[in-house]
Image 1: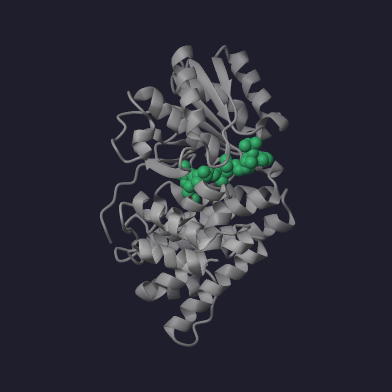
Image 2: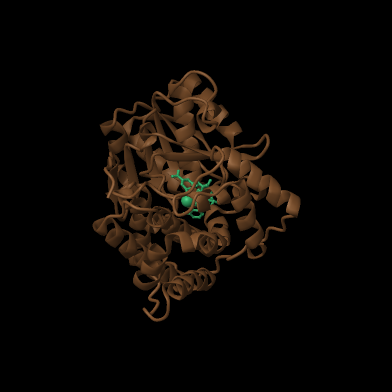
Length: 392
Ligand code: NZQ
Ligand code: ZN
């Protein structure tokens, strides 16, 4: 077991109609002029944005709005948001939507609170010294950005997708009403479940330092999401399943399942970020498409964890060699992905990459991680290329 810091300052307000509390929460955290930042329009169509602006009007809180955060959110909109906040003297950000709107809001927050080019933080050139305070109304259970310290932005020039993490960007509050996720397309619900599980698995498949309580939480979380993802496939309006998955999404990425272990492997995420940057695929689907190839590449280096995962999460019988059990666990995970219509390779993801594309992605991925990275197994550029090739 390793020492750890656990810091989750976000006030979670969970349940039906909780979005009606937004004005009170903004006041509680000192907001007087708000930027409401959202995505491509689902919150307009659902009427959520109108309910939010009505609440703020009623409470006498002034605001400006900025929509247009796309999945794999763009740096250019972040720059626009920074300018708008400076011009309007915005002192509080409200992200309404999914990980993309929230991450874009976080980046805007860094840009307002720090001098210079905000991309520097995502380009590992310097560290942020603050971030504008941020609140969130979540509409998709997936990234955990509502409690996480991370944000992921894509620079259009060169299609570079990068993440930056600091505690400054952890939201002050997160409003989570599972009913708001009921308008999601089935594909996005499945992508979200995949991402949630992957945030836990990234921390689970690590070398050394594992802690029994953390493993138990992680395995319970994985079993819960696996079960409820199938319930939602068949019954998308099931409130309890929506609620289970939504809370799991926050717990999967607020640091809880990283306590006592080495913080995570994260290579499946890094491999996916190149796919997201280059082909603009949905994050969860991209993760599912590369995970099996990653797992087969690394499992021998971390066999006891894959065996434990197979038995405790994927219900594989404890029969045969450890290696056989581990491989059955990987196969069972891929069967699960297929059962919720997630891809298990790049072809199923709809990506037809040439050898040149794979080489480019491996190169960019290696640059993005500073040469090599991983905990289950340390991967260099050649290893990344092998995994991309295997996932074709
Ligand atoms: O843009 P709108 O119109 O809102 O539509 C979105 C989008 O098309 C739609 N949607 C969201 N809520 C909806 C809805 N449609 C109908 N009803 C609703 N209630 O769903 C689509 C996906 O939304 P998006 O915000 O892109 O999804 P997600 O939450 O999966 O975010 C993905 C982004 O987050 C990054 C990913 O890489 C990707 O860029 N990540 C952020 C992390 C973090 N900040 O901690 C960690 C993750 O690992 C991840 O990398
Ligand atoms: Zn993720």
